[in-house]
Image 1 (cartoon, one colour):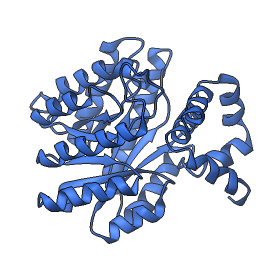
Image 2 (cartoon, rainbow, N blue to C red):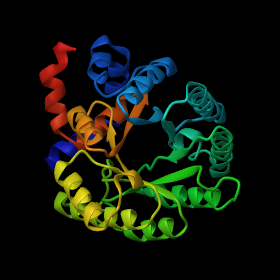
Image 3 (tube, rainbow, N blue to C red):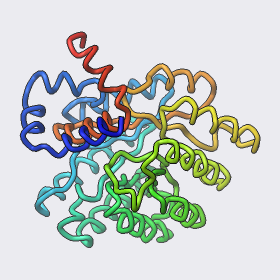
Image 4 (cartoon, rainbow, N blue to C red):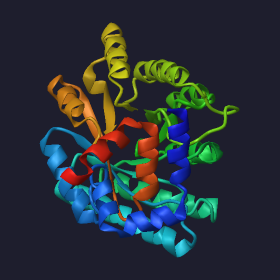
Length: 308
């Protein structure tokens, strides 16, 4: 499995395969299980359907590492449209944004200005902006930006962070974020990180995920725990029950198209579920990282490719 994971992550960076995949009918069929569609309207229709099933949504306009300020501004405009549509349609939804898509690699100040504008828009429409986490080289800059904006009284509570359980530093990060009242999405992590910064063994990542989940549940802040692993979910439920933490005080988060049966089961049991809902034409790197994160998805896709 480690070899397959590394291979899939390497393929996520292959420009020729990406170009072929994103422009062919077969590639689009391959992506449709995990991506809501190519346009805003596609994503909003799926979001409405998920809301009717009792599930909240986090909308992600796919893309990263823009190469110009104009591209960053255009990417941000999609999110401004989403915030307006969420409010107009009264959706139970928020937005999830990558800093490199907002120009972080070009200029940190540009990215922060764009994100601040989105957070102000979210505050004005009773919305929420989650800043997605990318690879470990950007962890510090991402968390610092979230904390700076969150500490402003007029923006407090309208922005949240993502923490990856496979990083050694994550416990310290969570302790700091929790102390400041920042909402966190905890996930395992989907990038190929060196052993100097991340746990190389799955068992260690899993153990850290459970440990960090306990810190978040104890904080009294509303957090999201992102996992499809039934053993992890059972451990979280057990801990919450022992600590008398009501299901309304946190949410499970899952990817669109993954373990739909489990999503429905959790809703029936009275837990909050939020579905991470990506859309857009730049779907290839996202999909390959999701397959690397859970290789069983690859077998599922290959088995069902001609049944869509």
